[in-house]
Image (cartoon, rainbow, N blue to C red; front, side, top):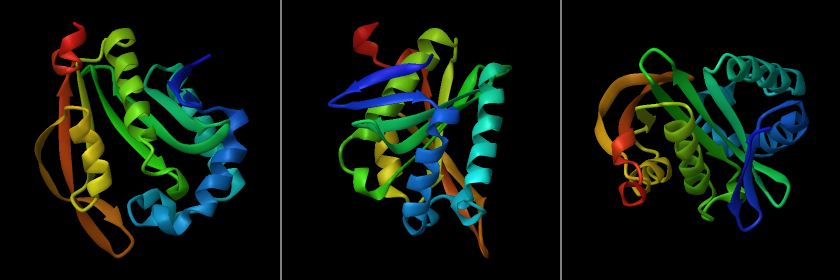
Length: 182
């Protein structure tokens, strides 16, 4: 199975049936917080819908088109990070979210770093992408800490209830990742 130790009691694991309840519980405890930045948090977050999404993500994992991960801290679900893989382009778009109580610990930065290692070394990915709301300074800081380059703004690219928001796009090439280790 897919499991990466992030240190200090943190890890990323494959999102599967065993994580559905913890993901559902964390999402619903953090809905207002998540709705500020995540359009998906405005839709149904019942146990059935969360489990159905988990099943879909696993089918994409089997096809090699996604790496869906749960971030855990001391055995508790703290958030998630996922890479959507474009096999033809050899690129991956990375997304992440975290429960509010887990922010400020470097969990997302460590989780995305581990995911990048996996993508670049084990999946022959040439380019990683992070896109996020122009206003989401915390998410933007993750991309910048990891060495991503700000490539531009997509106007009105993300649909929220009653509005469209601009997204910034960050990119990272395999040869730029952890140059000191190569």
